[in-house]
Amino acid sequence: MSAARLTTLDFREMKQKKEKISMITAYDFPTAQLVDEAGVEFILVGDSLGMVVLGYKDTLAVTLDDMIHHGKAVVRGSEKAFVVIDMPFLTYEINSDEALRNAGRIIQETGAQGVKLEGGLEIIEAVRKIVQAGIPVIGHLGLTPQSAGQLGGFKVQGKDPTVAKKMIEDSLALEEAGAFSLVLECIPWQLAEVITEKLSIPVIGIGAGKQCDGQVLVYHDVMGLYTGKRPKFVKQYADARSEMVRGVEAYVSEIRQGVFPEDKHIFSMSEEALALALK
Image (cartoon, rainbow, N blue to C red; front, side, top):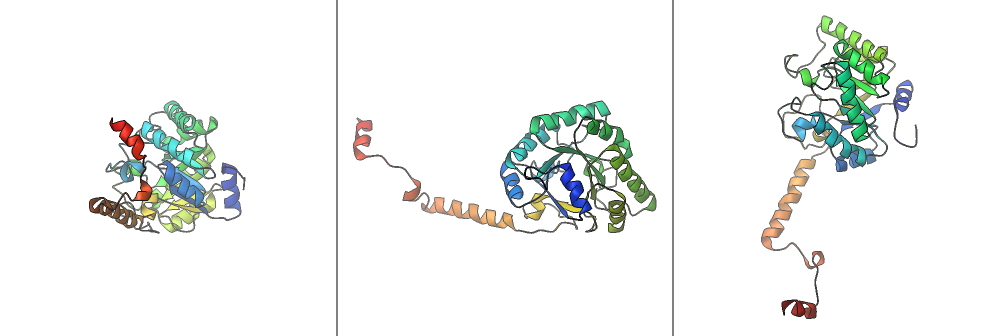
């Protein structure tokens, strides 16, 4: 692997060597620093920030400016990881020219290394045009949150043979259009295994089984920070929220008891200087 920030070639090489790839979301500078230091290869500035950071009920309210604002912070906070930013709802579906314009804004204004788009054949021209402009693209199939309403909610996708067949066709089309990686969300592991084997590009799973080339989860789920409903495919690795609450409770308690600040936390001036100031 390269000594500097990871590249698309590094990920293709990892797939060839059957080395697993880790991806996690981040939405701000300190989180980006933390996950980068921990050795994550991919940082996704996901439009999931709408729910876990901004408090929306879904991802649809997230704007391009939101993604750029948070993306800038993540790029500044990371050094080694490849940073990819979600293109939010209606920034790439209208036509391929607008998709390229918006993808260009993301890359130019944030310094990120790539963008991610949800969908298959219906957005293939947008993917093709963005890639032709030199911007790395990650595809996203299966449960696509921006179109969850059309899919009948946040449910497993691809169990139906017709839907599974289309997903395979979509994945091949995305690779042919130049996508350098693909996220598969909430689909049967058998289907994910087939797609992973058919593609020469890395496949990152979320609720898609260990047969994928890598895995992605939302940082707030991994760390136990998000209080909303947790999907079946999430594994919580830490209870950071409880520890943070305890810390704030201790802070509040010490203020109320007059314990904080202690002498070591304060500054002083000489009695002479104070006397002169009071004249």
